[in-house]
Length: 229
Length: 229
Image 1: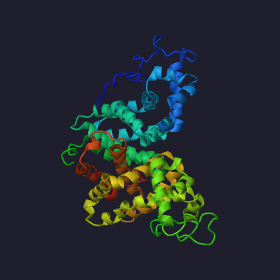
Image 2: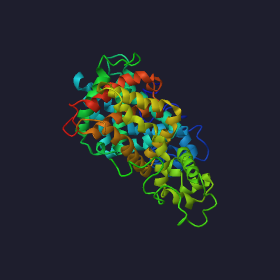
Image 3: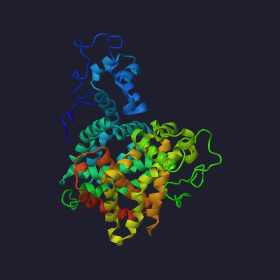
Image 4: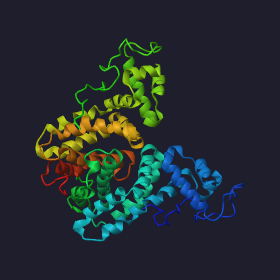
């Protein structure tokens, strides 16, 4: 879970051909010079986010990203590698807000942990600016196995493993996943399927309702995954 | 929530042009006689399930369903109505197992309610025969707003409202949705995104872990949605 790339700066996925995330002069494919230059990488990344968000992982290609960015597909490969790697780099930005969760978790007393996690995560999903890119990622991950693998790796390394690192109990990763499951389900019913009355409930009411659940998963010594509960 | 069609037999959605769910001789579109006859409706329904399951709501059309069933698209419309209505009829069968949930809930003591719900729902998802069609529906509902609306209506009427009808507490629908959210999140993490260790956990361990959560939502008088928890 604490994968190899967890120390890599955002936007620089490991495994990109350039290695250090910057274009290299030598070895660049012939005929890709037209769109190159300062800001090219950022332009490709912006186009990738736009394409994946609008059309999903399935219907987006390295070629269509290149076209949207005004560069050759070979240059997209040059900067980012495979379609999965472009996807990883594109969605990583959307996880920005969630990266603050471990800090939010640590900043307060032990008893209020469940409540802080619930309020923090609902805050991210209540704001359309952070919600829409995440919804697009969920759609891709649910419909495509390769996108799910990228999503699983990023969420695992960047969010779940780090939250687990804040817990001082046995089986921290399983506990975090149980808490995450409660929140993911709320997100699905409230923001994706939009069932009432949950879709229109006050965020603070939801926080109060699920906080004890999260608190139990994250801190209760009687929660023992792998030992029959 | 207790919608108008809740008393309709499975496979006979309200709103179908034929009304009673059987083909009528008068008013059938011209040129659709080729594929008509005994079993035609069932053949179309089987083809629709296959098409929606394989390609999702977006990429399936009434035309492609007709083609797969060997009949004219007009005959599909004749039996089922709009694409949404074909979808509703096609996915309704997949909800068969879940329709037993209210009975499973009622069959036992009050204290074991959370455990019974958890075991029942995980049982449905552990079995690939019942899981795969449900996964296909989730994919369609997550990626298409119209499919989500059909899904919302069916799950609301057929499952959530009926479970809520078994509860003797205030706000039964909100409570059922909180419990459903916990289970939906487990389903997403375990069967869709497949994060470890949750994906490989023993079903009975999961039942034991989430049972207290479901029990609290379904029965605890201190859970008061709309009143700050």
